[in-house]
Length: 276
Image (cartoon, rainbow, N blue to C red; front, side):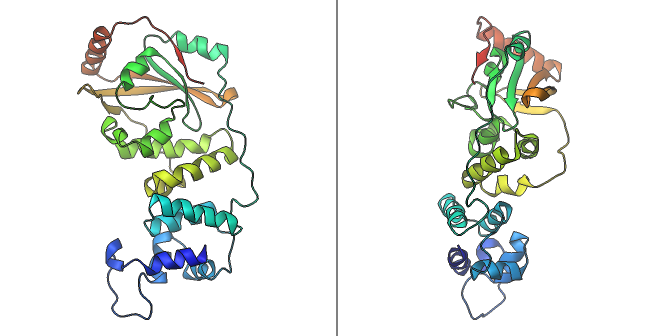
């Protein structure tokens, strides 16, 4: 792991990362002090990692180094692999059981009462477990529900269509990353975050340990049909199940009229969709 970090540091020129060139130096590439500053760790700690004297960096440190080096997805994945086999934070740990995706009949009955409104039931990892036809209409064409096991957090950070669907993408990304702190279990969140970090990169990892709750506000959506919508959200926590129902309500008359027209254009019999 230390050899890999040092090799990547030596292969990067300061100007590639927008850093000033300090002139001639004994070794090529990025200075150790510059990398340490970008990663938010001490030079001494980085030196121990590169020399193999510290074989237990935490996942947050591994992610911080990957972000500081602007690693590609392939290199980021390899760094996590090296951290495991060298004795890092993941070594010796078994992948925890995935969170329970079972939805109680009572929760489904409550969600069914919200038809044909816009509502979705998720767990703390962002897995979409059930939704109304109104939610399917709202997200049609966005790609959110395309996967066999759709996940809102993964969609926000890895699907390019999310940035068009959510005009205020940064605010939505902050919300999804912060929501992981209320996940079903710390182990499950840790493994989910590690897996997602490989493909999501620094946009995800730099938000992971921000403990400031993002401000709640009106959600703006650019519907693939070309309509711009403004929605308020009401959350109903099912604390016993570590799940949540989110209800989306029109924030203005223009949005209400647009949603009514969209529903009129695609008449259907309300049918609750169970994903779990």
